[in-house]
View 1 (cartoon, rainbow, N blue to C red):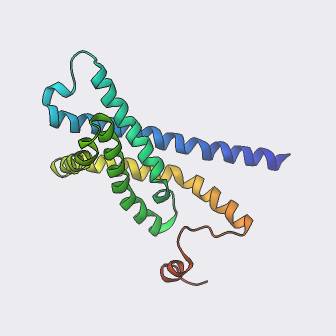
View 2 (view 1 turned 45 degrees about the vertical axis):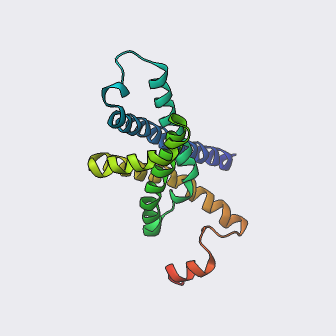
Length: 177
C-alpha cells in the first residue's frame, strides 16, 4: 500500500513539471511573437482596441511555442553535461520550429519561411530577448528532467537502454565502468 502511495506522489510531481515548462514557453512565445510583429507592422501590431487579428497573432504564438516544445522535447530533460549541451542546441531548434509554425498561421505561405529569419534577426538586434528565450528553455529543460529520470528508471527496470544515443556514440562519449 505504501509503495502505491509513493509511486502516485512521484507521478504527481513528474506530471506537474511539464505543465510549468509548457506554460513558461507559451508565455514567452506570445511575448516574442508580439515583439516580432511590432517590428514588422510598427504600432499597428498591438492595436489599442482588441481585434481578431491581434487575438489570432497571440494564439499563433502560443500554439507555435507549445507545438515546438512538444516537437523538441527530445532535446530537453536529459541529465549531465551532454544533456545541458543538447538543451542549449535544442532551444534554438525549438525557437525555429515555433517561429515557422506561428509564421505559417499568421501569414500562411510566406510566414513559414520569413518568420524564423525575422525572429533570428530580432535575437541579434536585441540579445536580451535571445537570453530570455534561452533562460526559459533551460528552465523548461530542468522542469522536464524529473520526467526523463522517471522514464529512464522505468526503462532500466524493463531492461531497455536509457539513452537515445546509439551504442557506438555512447561508447565514444561516456567512460566505461
